[in-house]
Image 1: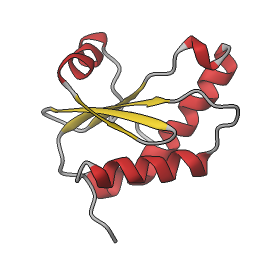
Image 2 (image 1 turned 135 degrees about the vertical axis):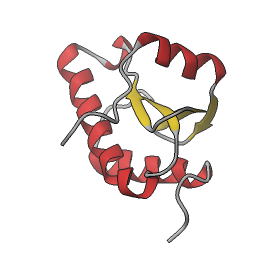
Image 3 (image 1 turned 180 degrees about the vertical axis):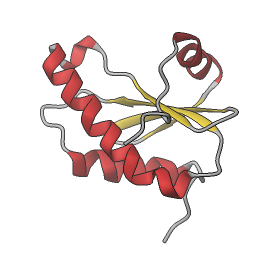
Image 4 (image 1 turned 180 degrees about the horizontal axis):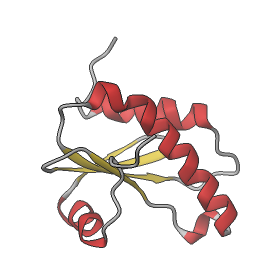
Length: 111
């Protein structure tokens, strides 16, 4: 899958964190700001554990976001997802929390 939807530049992350709006769920925080294209970034701090654990969390978050890409097409926002510290991380938890946040923000409609 192409990675053209990923937010990578530090200035883009700074824009989202400084000017973005925040929504919260039990496992994730979503920060978003209007932009010229749809991109998502994932911020996982060292408090979550070593690099192996952080990279696993980022892979799970990317896969969760990928499942919502078709319903988000046409919307131009930068999103940053920040996981909350937990003992266990799973794809199902991230998907359900991401869906909740995207619905709460009005980015996808209730089916």
